[in-house]
Amino acid sequence: MFKAKLFNRFLTAGWLAVLLTSQLPAAEKQHSLDHIKLPQGFTISLFADNVPNARAMALGKDGTVFVGTMSSGNVYALQDIDQNGKAELRHIIASGLNIPNGVAYKDGTLYVTELNRIIRFDNIDQHLDSPPKPGVVYKDFPNEKMHGWKYLRFGPDNKLYTSVGAPCNICLPTKDIFTSLVRLNTDGSDMEILARGIRNTVGFDWHPITKTLYFTENGRDWLGDDIPPDELNKWTKKGQHFGYPYCHGGELLDPEYGQGKQCKSYTAPEWKFNAHMAPLGIHFYRGVQFPKSYHLQLLVAQHGSWNRTIPHGYRIAMLKLKWGKVVSEQVFAEGWLGENGKAIGRPVDILELVDGSLLVSDDLAGVIYRISYDG
Image 1 (cartoon, rainbow, N blue to C red):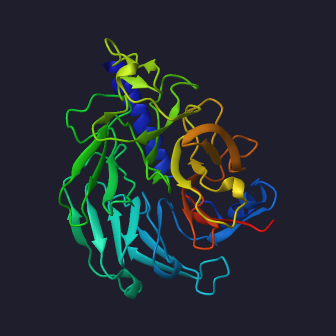
Image 2 (cartoon, rainbow, N blue to C red):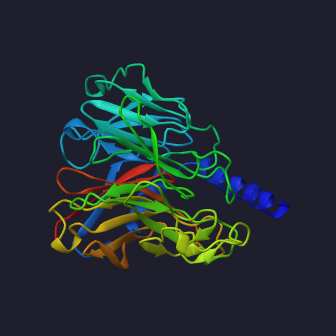
């Protein structure tokens, strides 16, 4: 018990360090672009360079990009008025919010997840310069900060989907709402738990054809540099349990909570990433700008390790799917980890624009990148 508490204390210090990391100076932001490696024919540029702690993104009307944050407490709206691939206008939609990581947009309304609630800004497109006071959609999520930041998306059923992470590195929470995937109506009604046993997910997307929900999950810490794996999971039915805290990666029983359990009792991941890659935002590429080989493939922002002897991650990977099954993983974009092992950027979320180019948020550099193809 003492060891578990000590681990959790170390973990808390680690993620707090990430939250409080200062922003990189402008020179280093440009310097990081010079080091980004992409497949032939792709280019990367800065879409916006003044978005401190940029996290999840959502696409609004006429190409407006909404951006959530964690440590800054702000929600931004970015506009590329002349359609030149760079945002000229930046609006602060809200400030002083409680870890407003997740954002979602639908029918003129912006939805934002804070630590313990979901709020909404109605008719936001007409009020970017003078945002209205937000209304409260749902306010009964827990207040625990560890893994309390939330992703937010609309599903094919037009309901809001989010999650509630574990309030610890490894523990058995006493409240059912922890380690869960949930959905609710836009008025906050009919909140239901869809799945449990999910340590922490801050990225998910639906396959454009099958409408199946895929989500990333970050594995527990302090079992070593190479275990347990991080995961890509697939939700198919209500009531699924994905293993936490008993089983990791579909095959590794937890040394503290796995006694008397069997991994076959839980839903195994669709894909196992290397430990501590910290996969966050994911996106099935739907556009036609990229070559056909990218169509309907899954791009993954790998935020990068913070407690590994030799750091890794800090890149964007692409998972190749065949008949709905992941068959391989390859690097799409890398270079945010310097040769000295020091990070100069940390990809968080991926957003596809109408023209088929991609935006990538970076919460360390405080910027949004644009990746396009002109090959």
